[in-house]
Picture 1 (tube, rainbow, N blue to C red):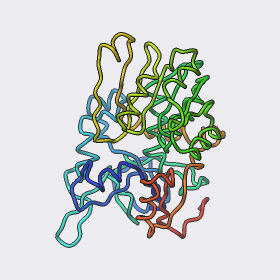
Picture 2: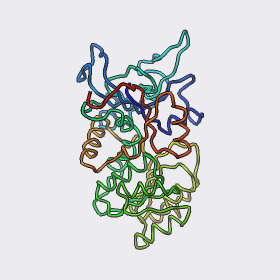
Picture 3: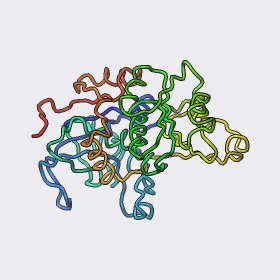
Length: 339
């Protein structure tokens, strides 16, 4: 393992909002170099550089339809703490240790299935690429794969963390004429403008719903994405929709919201959709993001900050408090890009 991003899903499990069973080794935004391969592995060789993502079996009906994020056994494979074969990945003494996403990338070495891995160009900086396997592919995939806005549509993204900024950049790439970023942190809104937001809204200073409608001739936007999981913000993201609009709720959160289906959904024909991992196929979506990155359209690395592996607690704290958008743990300090 060369590096791994820290994601809010790791924190959700760490603090008990979700669980893979304790003790556990977390981490699911890994990037590394193949050291060995099993006899039945195809398409990978020792020395290949890979980004790791979730595991899907590839043989259930939903996988065969091309929707691995809806794999019938997705939860068992990624969030049960054991491998797809039902065995534990790690042991310490006689105690089993749970894994995460069939990879557990907060490790110096791990074992994964080839369906977890996406081969990438060795000339790229592997330290930067791990978060493409979750946060960035989730945000961008929600736009590219789920919402699929048409050129000229309008999009508002609530929350400008890694997932939100990835959504915003994907909206810009898709041809949305208005891409509105909503947050309460001025520095993040400045970065959103740098990465392509046409407008930014500080919801600590103005009513975001009123501002969004003001920017769209009073109608609201075609699409909204909530990355916060905060009930009042989710409600704002729904209220900001135009007639026929759709809100994608993609935060990992224990919170609930109350809605009047008649007044808030039916009359204006609004929709709310949940999205898992951006409805992505990592082996297709991650290389696509890398191409956009090479073209200067998806500058995801501007959200990242590197930390030594030993500083994992500080990195996690900086993520939780919002100081750092995407902390990346450098696990192999001897790695140099291009080697």
